[in-house]
Image (cartoon, rainbow, N blue to C red; front, side):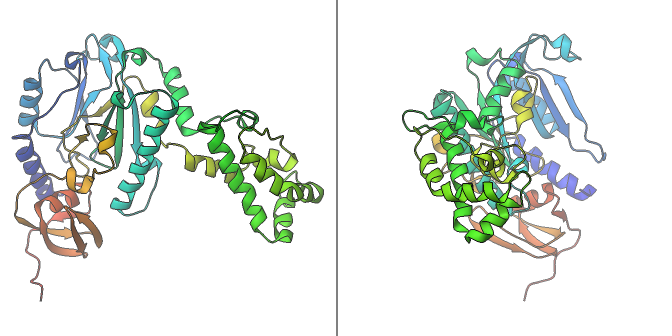
Length: 385
């Protein structure tokens, strides 16, 4: 940001914080806080190792300092303001899942990205509740203000879990370390969870060879390392029966030579199909027991959107970040200089912006400036004829 843009955004953040209600997390006195402020230094500096004793203290500090980003610890400490992590005396931590577009989808319009991340969030919620036994009431869902969602779980039973225990949960929802032999065992019932997802992914992979012209399928298979023409022929002759067996969870499947290759770590296509069925959460966030996380009701300095805590997973379907997380910064229009053309919707209005000077509403100006798409213009754009 140039100085004029930086000052404009800071003023808008100040206006918001001067009137905003800032909720605080449970056990406030045990939380460490961290802040990133508005400055022109090329290196980002976080002021952390801070603690507060009341919501009024938090509010007073934020209104005075006007942070660009605002965080609190997922961990509980005896001395959260101590200067070193060892001195803080760790007492436990919430379980956190972070679904961020960086790990899910790239190079798509912002609106598309948000929809894709929402779909992943629903996928994770289903795994946590239907397969891992967490109740919906224990899931505290937060829109990050940027490109995704956080799920906080504060159950006392898991507060003392170390990183290794949290890693097991991450591995499960991400589909990491699945053993093909276990996935292909026969099971009673519907064989839900990963056995079902694994079989579906494998069925798709086998089906693609059945949909090829037979000669092409044989050439494709025989061209893979360790697969000869005879093994490829045998596999294709049994492929229809294999798909049928995979569709019945109670039927055990014994891998052939070709199937062993397809289910191995050296075969990327099946891994990609499995990954598409996983909940692509940010693994280091969940395993880190001393993480800082964005504070609900704060503003995200990279978007100008509000960090929104939802009352529960049932609210997620109707939640629209580009309406529900947009702050009313005023009814004025602002001159901006866009670095490139952009089409997007905000507050139900479709905007088609061109490169260069133009006039946009305040909330759009804040978003564009925070995202690095535009700067505040010193001159007015030419009139539109």
